[in-house]
Length: 269
Image (cartoon, rainbow, N blue to C red):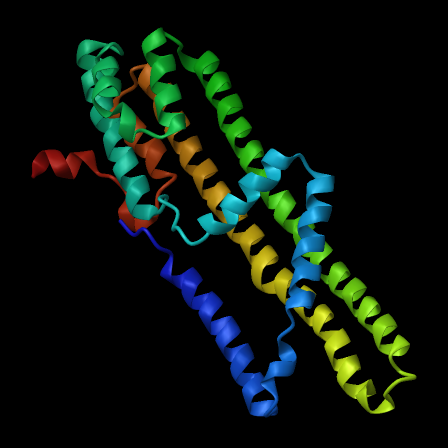
């Protein structure tokens, strides 16, 4: 299991690396592209406007989500295949001993279970079945998804704020430049360049940080949602004690064709 999303780190390093290299090839005075005041104006303004727009807890969760894009999602074809195998194994035990056998699973693996699986198993052991179980699990799955999508909305809002504050910073820089114009006309070009740096930072922040983070977070949320739907179908069929082969065919519809489960071949082996 990977703990770092190397492709994300590669994208960040490659993006800024190529951008920096292009600047290095274009000018000998690379220092003009560095401005602490411009960074503070863009990031500070973006953060302040976001805090005004959303409750603080959502903004703080969003900052965690930005760090979270460096961690790969645990949902992939291989883990989905394991989930199907786990459900089919549980189905054999439930058919023999009833849903109460899942209590032992919860006590043994509770710390390793995700929130949705833990909730689904608790409903099963309580005695919910069929449509009633499906309705509860669907509402819970959608609730998890909607809460996680708030962070995507916040990131998209930050992506829209950043270029605006970059432009505001440029206007502030132009005002300062024009005020100093009467003192030294020779500094006009340098002052204009520094004023435009803030707009550059705003566009970079939006397109290299906030928008990619929003898209990556949205992708992770949808993958988790897809996995929860798979588990939901499994729990409903477990509650109805359906035949393992029927469960297999239903759950295989969620998997990559190359990773379809085959109970018959396993029994032959």
